[in-house]
Length: 336
Picture: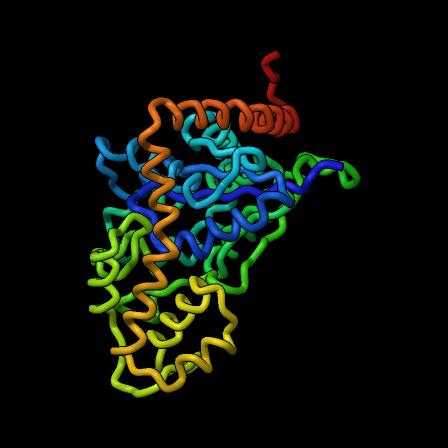
């Protein structure tokens, strides 16, 4: 019996950080033996904001290497580059022609970013959820691992698939399946080191707001020593007045593989001067095997090229038939 399929991806817009690892990649590693996993580098999405052309390909390869270093196993997972498969862009165009404009204008992330970018906002920022729907639906996954803040995008994907099925399919024979969200309860939202109310992000202008997966020990120590805390003695979870405390305790809990109850007892009488070195040692120890494996991978000539070539071939074997199925439903002749 075939395994259920999952699909997910990350934009190669800079170094991956703890939020990417704990909120996404670690979850992929934990579930990979139970699913047919398709994991990609979303380089087409990356250019919705300006990118340095000299760095985009290098960043894409770095993310691929980090997937592998973090524990993604090619016996269970397919790793590929979004732009290497033209079917993504072609299906996105077909979807854009059946997607109502107001669906895209109502997307929360578009509204927020459009305000920041004002007259400089690009069309791609408005339409990238359609490309995201194409990314997902090309592979007809059963589940899509998402954070709470990404649920709206998956809902739009389901709406687009449902609209296609309604307009061009038959009631008892849908063209595309509707994927379900897979939301991880713990680690789904890792918050900024400089503001515990904001998600840790690669786009934050301050590198001190995040722990990058390739940060050396001295940089990790410096960032955690400087991170925002408060003047309260004693550390505890789930206090809305202490978002940084909750975030840092959560990081310690996950990276030390302890229960919430155990950490609560251990840290209840601690001050920040005692806790921060403990957290620093825990983060450094958790990231060391990932960093060591990363350097082995990038040091092996031709290895990543072979991984991505194999990934492209496996992904195309599924993506192209799906694209042709949609084109045929829309009335196109499908090239033999």
